[in-house]
Length: 307
Image (cartoon, rainbow, N blue to C red; front, side):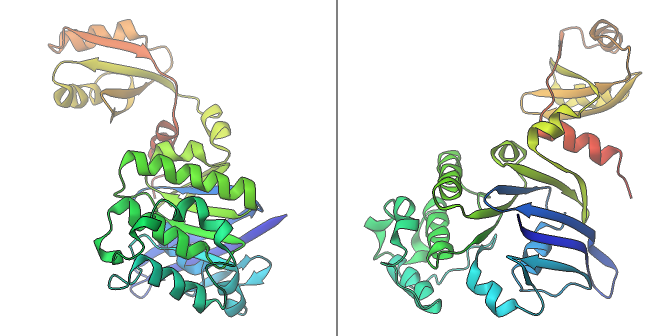
């Protein structure tokens, strides 16, 4: 059963000069974590604002929990939780005051739905008298999630919730999302620019320039990757990257952590590539076959999907 359905959704800004969404169509099954993975400016926030009834599309249709985002926006707002990318709670109110306020907006109480936020809120409860503006990034994130959940939504929209948050808080946050999905069957749509978070979702859409490049389970996207991929390491990595891009048979090369990921034409062996690099004064280079990640898939799709 689909809880979100989108059909040929289009949205542009600046009198049509900037096309934010170029005819998106997709469905989200109930009770899963669905990830929108893509860089800044890909269209993630615009899509979330349309689905949460904060913006109107130029054309196309969207249903959330079988309700039309245009006609039924009031009822949709009761059934969803939304955590925007920018911290948008009241900075001058305390942790407790923010939570009480959001509960009252939805005609509920913190006590009524405390079970939903208990695991999250317990981590910030000792700071309940602190003003929200004085919290750390991770604490703000937990408070924002608590406020988005306090009215027991059926669908939760989280726009880049882990941007600017430390790695430990990021890990904790994703554990909370899995628990919400498993224990309370909440459907979660989450957007992120972090490719490593893609594998934590049940299904993902790789989005760039207002279009879906690919949509499937993370493993299926990785399995569909067909390129010959090498991991390359050596001295002067910055210069090495530029030289790699000029090597014969190299299709793409990009920095990947402490190594470079390089795709080559079929038949180009590590020995051939090493030999060419040695001719270009890179004597000590390690080249190994690499397993593709979501980031490799994304980079490859971007190369082949230029407007």
